[in-house]
Image 1 (tube, helix red, strand yellow):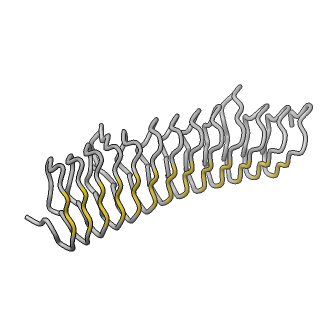
Image 2 (cartoon, helix red, strand yellow):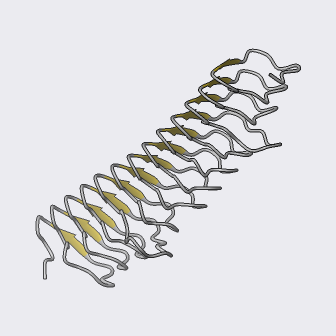
Image 3 (cartoon, helix red, strand yellow):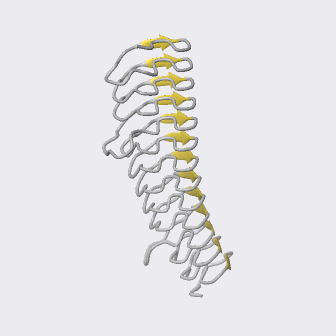
Amino acid sequence: HNLTSGAYNAGFGIQAGYNNKTGIYNHSFGYQAGYYNETGSNNVAVGSQALFGASGQSNSNNTAIGHNALRVVTTGSYNIAIGSNALDAMTSGSSNVGVGTNALGVMTTGVGNVVMGENSGASLTTEQANTYIGHNTGRFLDDGASNVAIGYLSMSGTSGTSGNNALYNVAVGRNSLTNIAIGDHNVAIGYKSGDSMTNGSYNTIIGSEAFKTADGGESANVVIGNNAGLN
């Protein structure tokens, strides 16, 4: 509607790409998809108000698929959001991937996070370099960074609290390090490995249900074997 010198753009839907003036290679499909972007380029927005943006702000190289995906982005770039409300609070963060309903749902300026699964990374705001794959992985770790969690509820954190800043942890397996809050440098591999641990650090836990009852500040332990280290 406001296009001046932009080229190679495509829009389908009421007010899709409405404010684009000079941007190129933008593709907006859905009600108000890519609405505010004026000069940004190389964006794909599919879904109502996907990449809706903010008045006077432009962004480039983003992909948003789903209702409200990347809805309030301002200057953020190289983000991929797939799913309803995925990355819907993102403003200036870059190089994030959120796949799943509410994935990275409150992140604003974080960088380099990759999450896949409903509500995965749902409490992260400004953090960096987390990889969460699975339903509710890393859901309540609002200050966590540089973590890897793979598996249903792995490293989901403690609900109803803030300051969950666990760092440099690796959890692989369903319910591994499920309740971690402020523990750092732990490795847990196996179903329910380190499941109850909250603030322990420098532990290596390998095996199904290994160390699953450790619930305090247990640190610097090596526990290997199924059900190993039970109290």
